[in-house]
Length: 151
Image 1: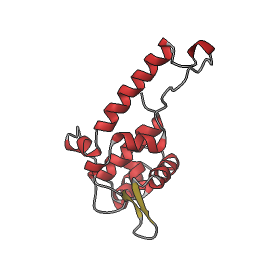
Image 2: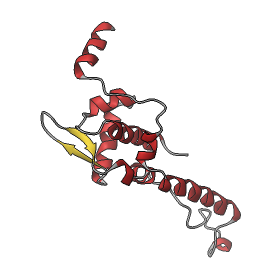
Image 3: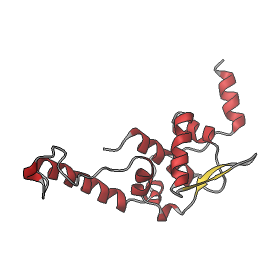
Image 4: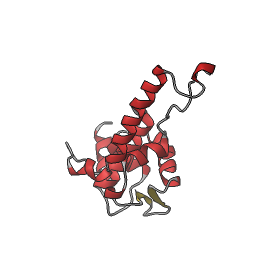
């Protein structure tokens, strides 16, 4: 239904919403959300470019949400990193379908429209108000201790 990139972006956004109040580094977000750090860095750039997150450079830098979780929809997050593709014309280029989608592509576009509508209605606040579990970020000290224990 949605791409791995979109899911990773949603994991990061939900993490930031659950842990509002200070910026988090790519490494902190990646560790907690189980997203590869290099890939997450690219995703976070897309989210920042669309104004969904703010990035702060420097010693106390990192990422935080740019807007309230109640004002941020799941649709906006998905569209920022891997937009839902609607079918506006028949990809078969059949002249008979010039003015309208064929039955197959109309059905597929209707499914995409239903998904889009659901994602537009769901906010990030909805996701954090009913969590199955809440993950807190590992401090750099506890991550180092955990890594040392596994060596």
